[in-house]
Picture 1 (cartoon, rainbow, N blue to C red):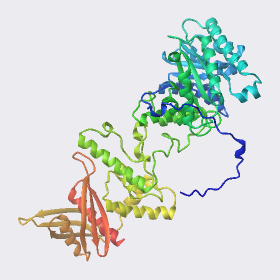
Picture 2 (picture 1 turned 90 degrees about the vertical axis):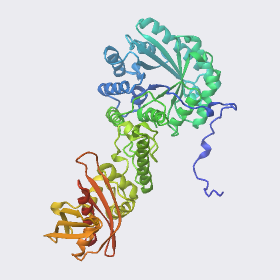
Picture 3 (picture 1 turned 120 degrees about the vertical axis):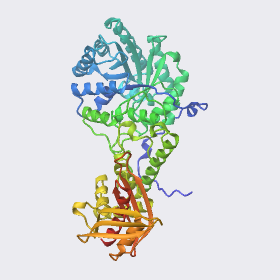
Picture 4 (picture 1 turned 135 degrees about the vertical axis):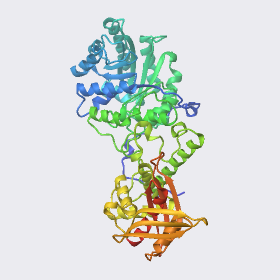
Length: 573
């Protein structure tokens, strides 16, 4: 195999390789995610601090209410010591008896300074369930450049901060508060593993986790620096080497600097992480936090309950866009405007066949489509499960083929076109898109279809319009057909005989000098019940032209006659 790529002029000498983890007996690659993790949303803290225009109190409350409604049980609500706005918001939801459900824990962030810790704990007075999240950076570049301290100095910051959190929690919070503690060695991804472990152990020595006294150790990819597999190795190593592991909630907090935050979170769960911290739609500093929606929906698409309600994903998006004053990308997984859409003709054809197969399988089993396993090409989930309709699944442009067009007609108008008619009509649409460019909407498709095959009787084109028809059958099985029609604008009665109404109509048309031969005929009902209409499709050779026609009527005979007229009129158009 030949690789013809050439060396670039990029300054690669400036960057070193990320250190791998020596863990030859790693077990995580053989694990599977079979249950949802604990989730923490940090939209109101990590997400909000990354906004050009941070959320107003009203927008913060709307975001908090959304997260509660979706089912998040751990929500980081701010950095109350950073300013009055965050402090006041934390107080507002604690003092509102309807804001925080009994089973929801709010979390607040603080740095390891005594004045900040005191103010942070003070903000939580009266809360039923609350966690203080303390962090300090532990990576070599921070020790050398930012703090200019030794490893021992950095560890002491974490130890002293933890001690102060415990002291102020005991001093300021009453027995009504179920208090929890979280520690993060910030920049874990660039911190030596043995030192990260040493700091976490020192923090636990102060906090003394045990039964009914869990500690959350969060190992953040504050800046994503490695492949997801290496991140998982680091989690497995930490999980193996931490003491008191049964009292530790090991939390993963990936950022998306390399574009692999979702994969890093998933592999870390396989490696033993218990909880994921992130934001809806990946909001956050720089390239964002891990996307909680994508993670949850990935589980859902594998038959694992995410324990979060995504059933109205457009409402989630609308609220998120209002709160963040940003827009979700049209290609964003599971929620973007175009993610359940196919423009490619081969994709559209496969989707149509997939829907047809699902309906057939469900009917054969005597159940509904919702009761069988989802299996439609190019659609990893049923759009209906997240509140989307099928209208946008297939959209038509110059790259589209017959499958997409046929899907629109069947889904929107209950017309199941025969395959050769699909090909014929797709060429008509193709000519339109080639001439005009851009996308053809379902409404455009229907308008073109009507004009081509089903002209409006009030503005009809073509030589012939059928008003009524009556057929009688003699004892020899010969049908005689009498048709009341308008021919070239004049009322006319046409008669003919044959071995069925269609054959008899062909003979009647010969009196007008029109030679018609039947090539194919198909029909189906468009609905059920006494008022159901039938759709008839006829492929005819009209003179030297081969064309399809369609007729729709409550009477199947009239529907077939209209289909013949549709083809005949098209031949003369």
